[in-house]
Image (cartoon, rainbow, N blue to C red):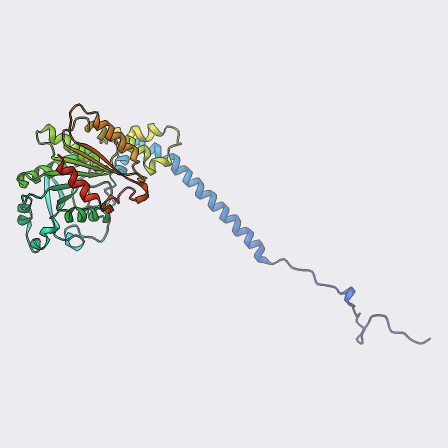
Length: 364
């Protein structure tokens, strides 16, 4: 028989595969797939650990604050935050014209830093002048405002500087103090201490103003300092000529309930016990509501309706309390609409502010 070649073999004798019978080598799984799963697992584990740490901190903080009320006092003052970092408070001329820096000693071992900005109308005259000239200028019949700032930072914080500029341009002397423990002032802050610093500055100014009106202006935490100081001065027979409160609260306990930090713990069991009741244990009360019941000084309250740190409802409540005081004196509340966007610290931007202050002072 005639020999036949085997089917489907090529010239080399190897099988030939058609398209329909084409074989493929087994597909290998890439190694990066396993690595990706491993990386994802580590990521989830790390996220869980981080979340657990946050939970532990969240639960622990209230107990620590209750055990150590002094820590809550640190939160109240935030004096350890000495911003802005690159401003020399001894050289205010770098950011604020016709301004001098000096120091007072309210009590032995304590010195407090103060800036004195003269009215813009006397700016040229102030160039090159020493401290004695600035002191003498306080008797030039222009009203004097003692500015008591809020917590944290120094007298060089931008919104404070901008307010000083507005007041100076409006014809006021402005004296801004850094309480003990703040900025370049010595000591540690306490409600008693910062109140006494403000009282001392008022009396120092009043002794040099020769009849010019001297007003206390407090902002935020500084409103509690302002009413404390005004009450103490009144008890000493030297009531301030006027008190102006910017973004005030009723008392520090109620302010703490609305503060953004406090809101984090609103749903925490025992919130009042751990936080609000601890204010008294830390000797920080700042009772604006009790103080305005007895103050005889004319009172102006300024508040932005979109304030997210101290709600305007507290200013309204404080105003109502002041109106119910047994003695009569000028009490005025000015609310700035939320649409203006002034929030907690930008009321100085309002072009009507100088007129509001002058109208108030001219009416007393």
